[in-house]
Image (cartoon, rainbow, N blue to C red; front, top):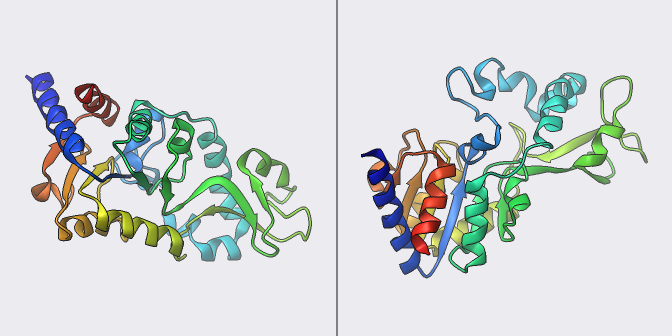
Length: 253
């Protein structure tokens, strides 16, 4: 019975995608869970389950206690660098390749959408792909950041010795204006927004589905947990994103 329900939902979403002239995807941490990356708030498993983000992941902590910041982020970034896209990432990339998906807006910093082949990507929280000097602006790809650490456990610029920070948005920082504006335009012009693996609770990204709905578009939700938009969703899929999205792709073919 569960398989039949999932297949029906996948077919419904496939029909929405096929009839939409402009479809965008909004993804959250849940899309990367099948790749072995824990989300943030799942009880017993989330990244912030045993760590208070306000003590390690704020821009204030980065400047005030840079060693503490890197003690938390350095091993995490090394781990993220080894992760690979899963079938949900690949399905979204294939939808774009088929001309059925205009863009992916993601809250994730893990590079997996780009690794999967997505070309039109808006990363509203930045990316671990690069880190930059907060003094002179010099930049390094992720693969070279490890070589910037000194005996003090801090990554420093090779030119001016300034502190190097990952190009991700920390608590207390403003989101990149260009990315947020691009996401807003996509949301307002979309006939269909597919929300994948997101609780839709973290703003401003959580407000994007409302922009689509207000403009007369439809919202589809593919995630296990509840969201504030469940009652507004044209299609609601609650299975594993790594199974649901390939099923949608299969229904389209």
